[in-house]
View 1 (cartoon, helix red, strand yellow):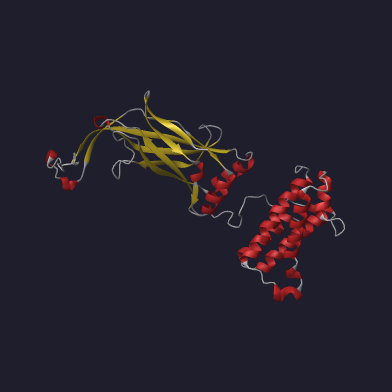
View 2 (view 1 turned 135 degrees about the vertical axis):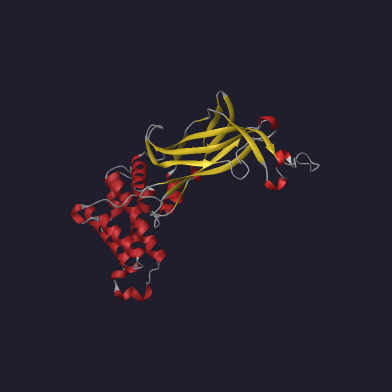
Length: 334
């Protein structure tokens, strides 16, 4: 959800800043993770003799219910006087420009962000960007072209036009900008932020790791082995590790050919015979069975040479089925 705040001089609103959380992105990879926060600055129109400019903008990335929470990364400041005062007012219409605040984070801060995000209820992960700014009155601009006849202030104060334009600034003492509230959608974070940090490259959607099943081995460890084999290009081994996850679940649930996984969990949930989830789960589980078994049957080798895409698909299917089975096992899927 887009959030916006006024740029205020005393009681006078002279512009707005706006942030769309869907435009957040991650950059820098795991060695230099950076959260890029694009901000739109809109200055309200002013008469030429009262032209205003936001000449400095700084931001602090805050984790917590308000701006008194924990700051992540250093305060970021931007000089907005370069390139022709992009965030200035013009007569007759609003003037809008985009800027980017780039918050460089330590790996421990990335971990803290992720912990907070997973702890938040779905769709309720919120960051805040506390903003400070400096606004100035552009009292006089010299060496500028005036009107349509091409006349200029050539030689004004002894400066030729080849020196470029110059502006006489008067700074306002107090510029107030409220903190931006950034409510991040999980899909946007997973698609646009985490990949830029070198995280979750193998996931199309976010999901939990398979849970620990002590009596049948550490399922999460087997899943991690499958992920490692995928990264190393050992696609047969990656799929075989997924088979271990599948077998652990069947042992945990006491499933067999006569009493398959889908039937056991459907009965636990009290699903009627015509409930479509029965068929969905049964066919998905059978599909996983057919994919993970070929590497263990030499007679199938000549017909089955898994690619990276095959192993990746198997890994994702194993993870999402494990997450679903765990929720049904705990009784939260009814």
